[in-house]
Length: 77
Image (cartoon, rainbow, N blue to C red; front, top):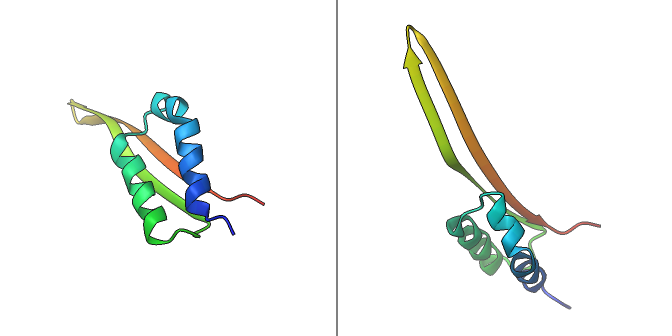
């Protein structure tokens, strides 16, 4: 039986450029790899991180923009 960990690793390597372009960080990928190492046959692994944040205050108003990237790898039926 092939472990899901092996398939997930292949997918992460195969789509490394696309993952990088959407803003996933190396830390996020390491978290996913650690989750797969702990439980190799888990059906999914995910990580979420705020990559950019902008906050501006003026005249009693607050403008906040947050860029959140979520990386999720899961087995589909």
